[in-house]
Image (cartoon, rainbow, N blue to C red):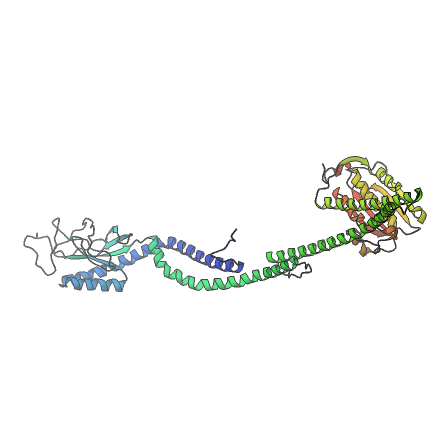
Amino acid sequence: MPRWSLFGVRTLQGKLIVASALLVIGALVLASGVFVVLTHGKEKQRALDHTTATAPEIHAEFLRHLLSGDSQSQLQDYVRQAAQENDVRIIMFDYSGLVVEDTAGDLEGKQLELPADSVAVGRRGLSRGPNETWHMADARGGSLTLVAPFPALIVGGQRISISPGDQPPPDVPSGGMLVPAYRIAMAVSEGTIARAWLDLLPWLALAAVIALPFAIGSAIVIARNITRPLSKLTVAADQMAQGTFDIDVATDRHDEVGQLSRAFSAMATNVGETHMQMRALVANVSHDMRTPLTSILGFAQALRGGVIKGEAESKHAGDVIYDEVAKLSERLNDLLLLSEIEAGQALLQREDFDLSVLVASAIERINGVEERGVTVSRELAPGLRVSADRPKLERAVENLLDNARKFTPSGGDIQVRAFAGESGAACVEVANTVTDVDAEDLPKLFERFYRRDAARTGRSAGSGLGLPIARDLAELHGGTLDAHLADGMIVFRLTIPRAEESTASGRET
């Protein structure tokens, strides 16, 4: 699938630069369009006012040249000079409407459509009437407004046209006068939007020449500011792909890129921790399985080779093999339960039961404490009913009791309580005497595969999963599990919502 590109630019920095340039050009075009639309009518009216104001003087001077006997070419020279000096467009035509001079060069040789004359003149003199205006099509596709300061001269209802200097014909009525052969009109182009755009293009180009370098320079600075940390993140991602998770990515920015950097750093930390946990899992599982498997294999070979003889020795070998297989089964069950919880596939089969009865039953199964002089006391409130998954909650309580059994020193105490908490939740506390745990060590107890007995031998040998599993099961029920130190004892408190509250939390089948 081809990668998306902007005019062939594939890098983020290049795309930002091109996008900034296009944004500037688009803004200039949009502003120019608005300017053309808003000012088009005003410009036309301004040009019309200017033409109307200058028309009488130009026309009077044209008549003086005409009546003084100037030739057509001399009149054309004057028209061109007057148009240039007054910044107007002048059209010179005869009384048939044939254009003989257009200072814009568009209508020469064309026929004008003249309006009907509306003002008469007095005897032997020019009578100035109001300006005469009419509209016609422009050769360029627009339209023109023509302004003629003096209308045609009328003699007895007839138009009379003679060349300059000629004598009037003998049949001219006594009330008539000579009519000049040529006439001029000032032309104002109404224009079109296209013409307005053409007029504005030079200024638009100038604005683009000024704005584009500034926009591109700013885009380069901004793009580098954005892409530099992204490049560092790319390098860090490559390092992670190669197995390096101790990555230092600058997170001092407060924008989206800074948020991305902080999220990446957190991800690298979590991935690194997960990677370490996976390595620890492999090492711990290998260690935990190697010893039982070695025992099982040794006794199985002894039985197979006939080394073990007699009923007593065979029973002992069978007991050892059974105990080691039970340990392996327990480890595998722990790992399977953890994987189900992490995958969100651990379902709760809820039922209503007395939590105190469950705790009492679990206490009865504690063994191996009497010979060490450990005292077990209980304080269980009756009628402490909860709606929970009985096997899973029993597993959590057993893990707490087993942890207390393993780490209570000889002559120590184990205290078990079940009661209703202040918030109405059901609470189970398992406290035991402790001598080797500090307050800063408490969070580590809930880390997977953490062992207080690094040697993993004796009665404290374990998988390091008991407390993490108990905590996950408590949270699965919508409860909590925490630990604190009090009076030389470590206290684990398991909190579970009561029957009327627990149905709203946890996943149920």
